[in-house]
Image 1: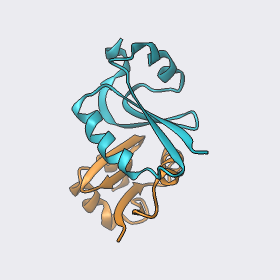
Image 2: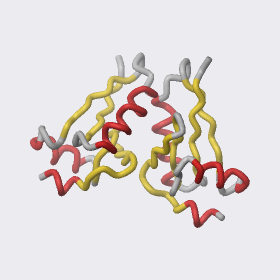
Image 3: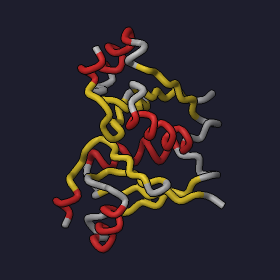
Image 4: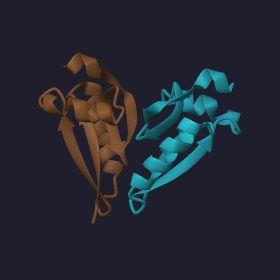
Length: 78
Length: 78
């Protein structure tokens, strides 16, 4: 069974650029990437914050947040 | 032929944590990850800066720098 990783973004140019690179890298035989647009799906902001996400884009894997470059502060999406 | 991506780090805890997550994600059938310790291999700092790397850990893919969390400013490694 593939492991789920979550890419939180807000559709910003930095987010899209990071998504294009990062998602391409992933071994899709082992991992499933869920893309979550926190601007459109504000109900999941608290979930992202729970994983320590401070800004987007960010990838959460095994409960650990990896912030990739800087698009927007998560506070700006609320 | 696999595409080369380069992970620049400095052996810092944030670097090691990011490396463990990120390198595991990679589809090694399509990508080859080179790990470069800029603290130990200062001769490659200029190369990293040329790709726009400002801090470590960072992954360079297709000439684009993805900064992953923040371990150390590249200036601190010189």
